[in-house]
Image (cartoon, rainbow, N blue to C red; front, side, top):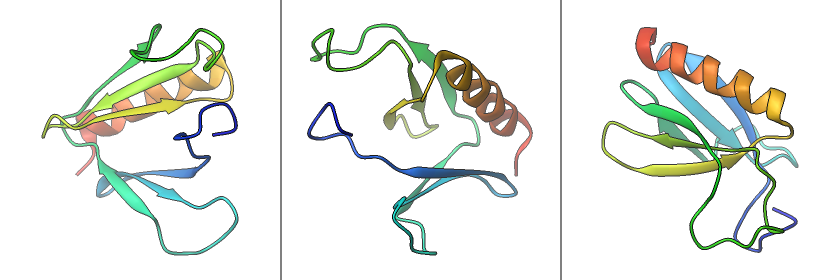
Length: 97
């Protein structure tokens, strides 16, 4: 969020029953700001994002495409964390309720 004006820092909680990725304001608050339904979604690493300059984002992006074809772009803190998120979300997308 600090590099691109329209990016926001969010805290994410992955759940498998039901299969959702809830996101929260990192400053606090117990109610989620929103949720991404993961059942049947596709998640992949993103090497180049459209409409960005090279210095805007590091190569630690990933994309979630929901079953309803809604695209979400997220940036991880590191490449290792990106890989962990992708694997976890793929697992929940296959097996979550």
